[in-house]
Amino acid sequence: GQQVMQIPQYQHVQEGEDFTTYCNSSTTLSNIQWYKQRPGGHPVFLIQLVKSGEVKKQKRLTFQFGEAKKNSSLHITATQTTDVGTYFCAVLHSGAGSYQLTFGKGTKLSVIP
Amino acid sequence: KAGVTQTPRYLIKTRGQQVTLSCSPISGHRSVSWYQQTPGQGLQFLFEYFSETQRNKGNFPGRFSGRQFSNSRSEMNVSTLELGDSALYLCASFSGGSGANVLTFGAGSRLTVL
Image 1 (tube, rainbow over the protein chains, first blue to last red):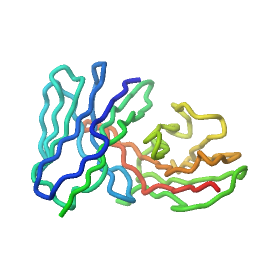
Image 2 (cartoon, rainbow over the protein chains, first blue to last red; image 1 turned 90 degrees about the vertical axis):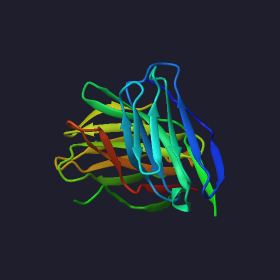
Image 3 (cartoon, rainbow over the protein chains, first blue to last red; image 1 turned 180 degrees about the vertical axis):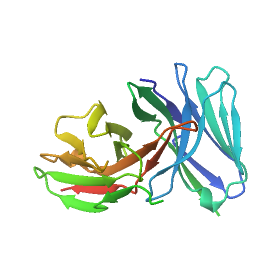
Image 4 (cartoon, each protein chain N blue to C red; image 1 turned 45 degrees about the horizontal axis):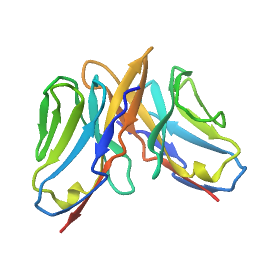
């Protein structure tokens, strides 16, 4: 299946600073999804990207899918303490009617107030 | 509508025991999948069920099994527990269609094996 590498593993930022996490693959991805998991919580779907060069925004969050569909990024502008958590990229595989997510290892974001 | 419900939320077992975890998907969702989350391995796919049939299985030993009932509720079972089975077990309910293919996760069952 399509594997994804995610960097950095950890990121500590001062509140108000920007944050970016990257997801990379050696093969072309059919799609990329992003999830957020708050401390002690469960992954929550943020967005799905499927088109080459696609850019989507959700308030302070900007998601990009690379032109070659081998990488993706999540950028948060002016972080807030509510942004704390682990951000995962994932690829949704569908075959024979089955759906399966392959996750990156995640980037754990800490925001220093 | 109600989300994905997993029970129990926390449990402690000893090595060699077995455990059964339950998941009720979002009403109307027929696909349920299970994931294991550990600090070392991250989130890993266990299996997926649709209409009482296992459609896909991850790379886990046979000690991990599951089933789905006619009302789409699913259970997973781990037999002969090992220390390494300590993890957060997440169930996800799938919604396909014309929009994004979204998996909605439950709060998880945190299993500690002593």
